[in-house]
Length: 259
Image (tube, rainbow, N blue to C red):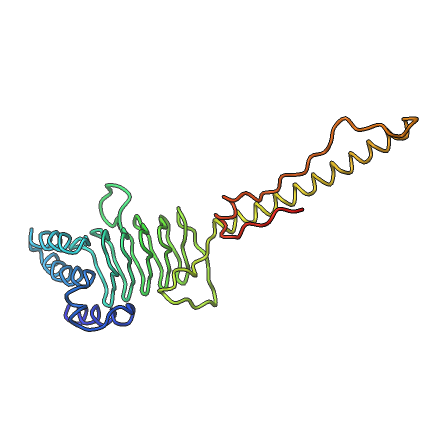
């Protein structure tokens, strides 16, 4: 237990640029305090002591805002950054050197008995507000984007984003654990593809209407003695998808209207 506490203390200086001295880390980092209390509570839980493990867990929750059930198994070098609102269930297993941000839930999906909480491999990064639910396996070096809801197993060396969480492979790309801005946006990419396809189809429809209008004009001109017969219907321009809301969602600048 002592070696785990030392690893928990050292990892903060490696992953948090705001950590400047040991006294500040000991007194002002609720993640470290919650883990320290948990390791004591977990030891008492394993040897079968009643009441006190849950009481220690409850006290730590009151002081830090982080709720960790005494039965949860947490490896060494785990860093809970900020941590307010973090909930870790009884049968959850967290591997070494995982990074967990505020608002994360490692919970269950019902009232089933036995193993009902997720198992995390090593070096897993879970962004703020993410939910990992059920008895699922999360591989090593997995990155879960902020706000994602993960309900299925995730292989190692993957990135998961969205609701429900979708696996996106980043083979050959090395991303720093703290660079959450580099996470891909799969939903925006799909919507961008659909928008491009719709615009292409609208252009084709516009060209077909113009061609049809030109044919009608030629026929009318051939039948008319004066050759000045006007068409009854004028073709309207296709309304391309240049809406402000769509462009803002896709993260693109508004395009100027075509002359």
